[in-house]
Image (tube, rainbow over all chains, first blue to last red; front, side, top):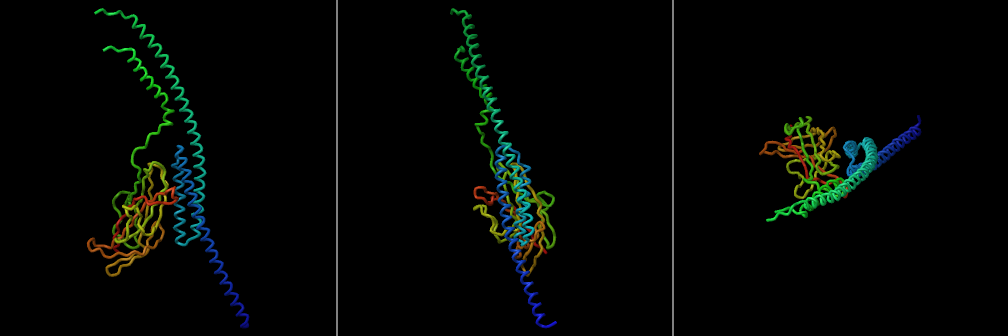
Length: 166
Length: 200
């Protein structure tokens, strides 16, 4: 093989290696960016879900099960951050995606639970108010009627009493 | 002393008011709120390998695996979002400052997150081993640890403690609570740890 051809081949090989290195480093940088953005997104999703869960809890919903799922999501987000710092961007992306998925799901379910709890609370309020108004009215009427009967009974008894002469 | 009609009327009025309040109690309970009593706090604990407050690892050797359990109990009056940071120090490096409520400035090596309901507890195992350590004259150096199958760098050295006869390090756990107003975790003034004597 002539020397010139060998040189050309060597140059092509060198260029290929260089371009592969460039592509790989660019790809690593882009994976790093993707991981960073996904981790931040997962963290936000957990906080959003936490806020909705707190709202559902305040409305009277039982959120224990959701908190267990959200703990898993938060653990995955923490894992994502730790493996990211160790340089494993692919694993960081996988953990962050899973965390994001669970976080979003918890937020959705918590919102439904909150709505149900708010509706149940409203029904309970109406029920309590109704019972109170009815009960109060019955007691009031009973007291008025009872008072009139007692007054009549008291004075009738008083009139029947014979005066005592000392 | 004779009882007049006015006295009977007073008794009648008081009894009627009592019955009225009783009947209106469900409605009144919606308006009148009873303040929650008691202090709000979080428990943080560390247990040995048998999940008891005994048998904690003390004399540690390079390459050996050790197990402890870290746990917390929420008594804050509602669900809370916690983080537990695992840190490593020698005898001279800073611990959290209880007076100023500041965490240790040392880097976090491992992190746990937990969302816990009021009155509930959370507990996780922590396995750790010293992966790389060395001894030179009267000092010891720990370079890498494995915590829950994750390798972390520490680069911490200790000098021989002639009083207690050992090279002492501390593995400790700081508790953080998520602050919604500040949108970040804040040190919750609680930490637990164990002393380890790096023997070999």
